[in-house]
Length: 166
Image 1: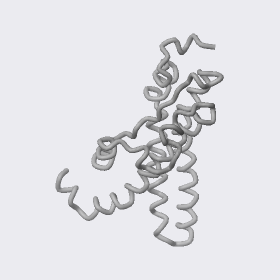
Image 2 (image 1 turned 180 degrees about the vertical axis):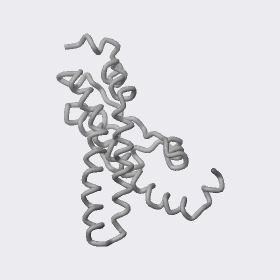
Image 3 (image 1 turned 90 degrees about the vertical axis):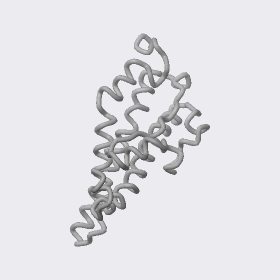
Image 4 (image 1 turned 180 degrees about the horizontal axis):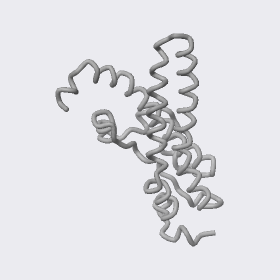
C-alpha cells in the first residue's frame, strides 16, 4: 500500500479524482440543503450550506480518508423538519436529493465524456472520473441502511415519533 502511494499512477489518479470528489460532494450536500430550504427550512442557509464551495461541506478527516482510502464522509447538512408542511414527505425528499443530484451529474458527465471521446480528445477522461465517482456516491448514499433508516426512524429530523406523524 505505501509503495503505491508514491507511484506516478497514484499521483495521476489523485489529480483526476480530487477535483471530481470535491465537486460531487459539494453538489450532493448542496442538494440536501437546497431541497430543505425550498421546503421552508432556513437552517441550511443560516449554516452557509447553500453553496457549491467545497470548504463549506468538507469534514477534515472524512476528506483525508476519502482521498487515501476511497471511503470517507462530508459534514451532514443540518435540517429542521418543524418548518416542513409534511414532515414525512419533506424528510424523504431531502434525504433523496443528494443521491438524485449525484445520478444527474453522472448522466451529464457521461454525455460530456462521450462528446470528447467522439471528438478524439483525451481531456474528457476527467468527466469519466466524475461520472464514476457520482455513481458510487449516489449508490452508497441510496443504500437502505443509510437513507431509508434515516427517513423511517426520524434520525434526520430528530423526532422519535416520526412514523406516527401525519
